[in-house]
Length: 217
Image 1: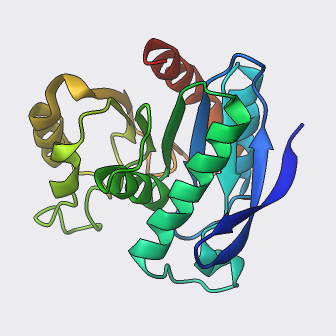
Image 2: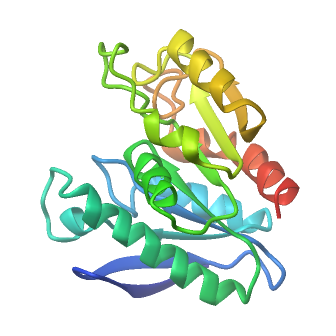
């Protein structure tokens, strides 16, 4: 079961949902990818599975998608929405640790919010978009190195947004702050074939996220 509510951000309200993992559960704020919102089966399924495993989850829409636009707006607006979501999750957990992250673009926005000073117990990346497809020479990694919190990278080995060699270099620089879990032959949404269902793809992620959250709570 989830609780739908309106999340107040500096630029207006957006849709959100809270999945309660229990009274003593830590929480993860899960931001969606650039092309699909909080109600995509991947997002909904992941949050439901996470709560069933004992970690609360909060999903929400970014402002551009809430307004019906397809292209992400200002990164400043996106990171402000993540900060608002973390604040809402913090209120609901009653003081338990709150982690932030998300799918692709959402995870990157969460990391940028953390780099700007947003408090979080750690970051969870469900397919970090390290670079645009075919542009591995232009990695989006600079802001990660100033972060002092633990980071979990769940990544398909055939993800066109994360060249394995480039990612390996980033992980070496991050050292003990980074935990890396590769999914062999999986793509950007952890799919291995076109027949894979989004919810099935998320089920394989949840145990790793639960282990990371519990280890850092």
